[in-house]
Length: 313
Ligand code: CDV
Image (cartoon, rainbow, N blue to C red; front, side, top):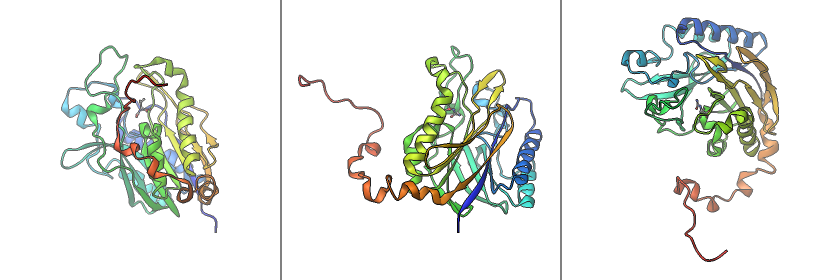
């Protein structure tokens, strides 16, 4: 029996600061229904899908800040998404800002099964940007003010006939993300992102945003023999142009579907989970070829420690 998961990558265009949650949920419902029409098993929405990317502002009003977070999932506003998904028999992945009952703030994504039960929850591990306002930037990236680093690391869940992992935006740039997921058997990884095209600390990277986005996800997919679904909230959001180019990537590293707009767009791909074995049983047979004994520094050391200066070559 083949294990094909038909995945819809539901790219979103910008969400305006004054766009209501209800209006955003309507957009998500439209994408979900398009996914159902095309026979999808799973529709993947982006990072922080329910609001504008608020870390671009140094907000001071606590009430305004809190309004960007979800304190329950589903809530009265997001419940229609769960109800419609259950009615359509389609699963989804959704990113949002989470405020826990004990006051922790995470950049979170959930995996929801076809019966609308939440089967997995992931909190972003790598939190980029800065934690105090930096006025020299044309816009802020204050994720480190608004979110804590997840203490939970990377998990996987049995769902959709396979093993599914999640990561969020900046996590996709780190090879450790994919390897830790692959070592738990992940066959399909859902990744939502908000990536401004302008990277203020080093604008030489600006023209390479699209290249780097695909580079890291294609490498992660190939080197770990897994499917990767990368989904953007792209377009010009509150004056900030953001990368689109959502893509579904096969375990071969090939892009098998890619968004061609910068707005709300659904791309669909049949992900054969058994294709992972082409790589996991050959070139990347971890059990045979990996050398964890040679990789100790990966977990022992955080930053770079060059060798001491010496006279030798
Ligand atoms: N939302 C993100 O995590 N964005 C980051 C920053 C650095 C642009 C990213 O890695 O795409």
